[in-house]
Each structure stands twice: as structure tokens, then as C-alpha cells.
Figure 1 (cartoon, rainbow, N blue to C red):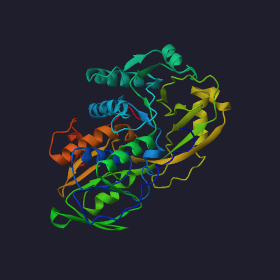
Figure 2: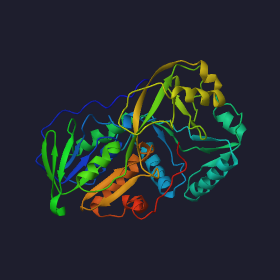
Figure 3: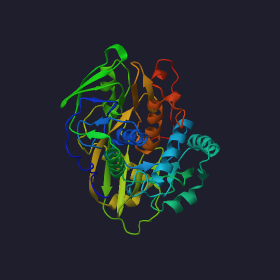
Figure 4: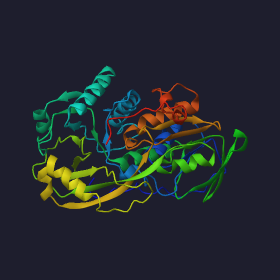
Length: 395
């Protein structure tokens, strides 16, 4: 796709059911993936509620990168399983997602960065991922628009790439409905009565639903949902912005998703141009998604050093979205008291790419089965026991 992201077309409005076996709060990639995997497993009366339209939160404002190039073994495993699912997405659940397996390229400037990525590459290799360290010449050959000035080396993961987030949401949502799940948009959760840790009553802007299981997949809004049942989900909303460039002549078809690790400047091909973004250390936490130009001078400085040829390329548009950040930049996945309150949130910028594997994981937690990935270390309880897990391969 090119231009600003679009949420999937709204599903037809349907009356709110009085009761459900499972209520999922949040209609982004996590919520729709969970709905699909539960319905596919034969779980009846699955209801998803989304306060706006499907994918209208963080998902459809994401850059769309998919990878398993992480420093934490849990993130590597979740990313690897999701990469396999994205590769089969056209068949299951059945949707074209414009997947480009062009690889993930991290550009590194210092000895410390090289050692950090050497170590994470060793971990990835031990888990079956073909990530490798490469020299500057190979990095420039992969991404000819970059300048080698100041680079010490790079890390390349050929299995990564990018796809279209709203198509992933649409695929999961369509399949979930086909399998019997109810996906209800324009339905904001106002209050949850979970007295007695038994059957809960979820009061929404469109009525009340009784259920024995609540799954929080509310992204940047998850802290509020957790607080309704007395569960601390330390998720902070943080604005991130993206721009799209005009067409760039002779842009390589196989240009990798490229990240300048030191500056956090990144880009991937978007039609005839590039999708470009970077973090802004001056950004103040909050729900404001107004697009601004305050970060552009920092982006220009990064381009001047790393890709000076982009300075003469115009912009066709852009957008702002929300990261859902936790204190250690790792997700919150698990189940909390009151029993049958499950959560999948706080992905800190790598949630979209983990959506398929997290849908499987929450399905298995609900069914009492062993998940394909041990997500015990991602429990929200880790912050009470000081067992944080820092993910280092992020920008």
C-alpha cells in the first residue's frame, strides 16, 4: 500500500449478545488473532469488542515490519512462529497480506553495538534462525541508498521483511466471523464487575455482556482495562510518527527493512517510495496522535549521515500512532487474578509481528494447554519480583 494506513472496512453492526464464553477487549492484530485462534479451536460464543473500528489503534499505524531478530529468546520464538504464519497467511486464515521477505538489516556504528548483535545472533542461530553478522560492503550492497560513513558493520536476518497490517487484521477478522465469532465495533468498555472471581459483567457503551473469561488485548489502553479488575498492567502510550516519500528512481525491489541502530532511523520500500520513521526521545507519553513536524529536524540529521540522497526526496504524507510501552520494553502475556482474566499487551513496538504466535498462545492458555512458546517470563508479575527482561534489539 501507499499513503496513510486505512483501517479494515467496518463490519456490519449487530446487536450485543447478553452472554459470551469469552470476551476479547481490543480489535487490533492481537484481538483479531486471538478471536480467530479461539474460534478455529471450536470455542463457542467468542465476542470481540472494539471501541472504534478494527485495527484503528496501534496496528494499522504500524510500519509493518516482521522479524525474529531479537536479543530475548522468548521474542525470537514468538517472532519465528509468526513468520511461519505470515508465510502461510494466504491459505490460513486466507488473505493476501503483501508479504515481502526482503530481510531485516541493522546498521551498527560502535564496537559495543557489534558485540550486542553478535551475542543476539548467537542466540538466534541456536534457535534455528539464519541471522548473520555482515561487513559494511555487504550492507551497502543490500541497501545501496545508505552511506557507509561511520559504520562498523551490520546484522542481517534474511527471514524478516514487511507486510500490510490492515490486511492481517482483515484476514483474521473475516475468518473469525466465518467460524462463528462475533466482532463488535463502536463498543467501548466502561466498567467490569468481576466480583467473586466468577462470572463477570462487562458494561459497554452498547450494553452489558456476562462472561466467565475476559481477554485484554487493548494495546495502549490496557492499563485502564486492567484497573477495572484490579490487575496492574504497566502499559504507557507513546506517540510514534511515520512519513512516506515520493517515488525514488532505481529503488531496489529487494531493499531490506533497514534500521540505523544508533539513531533509530529506519525505512522500507513502500510502493515506488519509502516508509520512513524513527523514535523521538522528547516525546511525552499520552494518547495524542496528532501528526507534527517537531521530530523532522532529528530525522533530517539522521538522513544527512546515513542516507543523504533522501534529503532531496519529497514526502507524500504520513501519520502518527501509538506504541504501547512497558518498563522493560517486553510484552505482558499471561493470566491474572481474578481467574480467567487473560492479557496480551504492552508489546513496545513489536506487537504486530508477534500477533500470530500470541493468538496461538492465548488460545492454549484459555484451553489449559501448554502454549507453543513458554511465555511465563512475560507475566505482568515480573515487575513485582524484579525479574524484568530487557529486549535490546529495538528502536
